[in-house]
Length: 140
Image 1 (cartoon, rainbow, N blue to C red):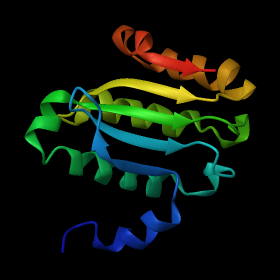
Image 2: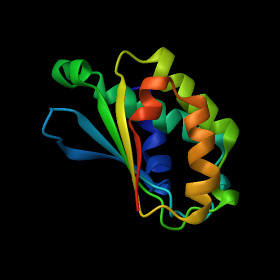
Image 3: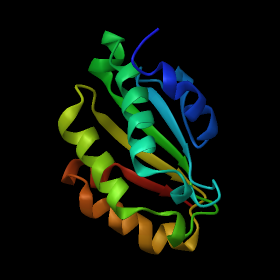
């Protein structure tokens, strides 16, 4: 039961975002984003917002994770400029930084594509605070 009961089917259709079952060494939750999903912009932005909000809201139920925060882990292997939505990213950044009581502590992107390295990453850094810009790491 719950407000997001109708979204369960939608979440299964959006396989690119999931909360990993284990925490890192510092006790932070890890959220995995597979940016290799073919053209993620085919999903309506409002649906993606609801799914992301629900997933991050579920993290806030654990007080130790709420204190420690969460870490983003992403695969950027096949990221293209077409699959990047600046508007959705802007919304998600505001959600992460200003709305939820759980803070993003770092983000690690593995195997970034050239589009990820030269287009998406600078756009993301533009929206982050100084602290998050220092903790945004591309692992080549």
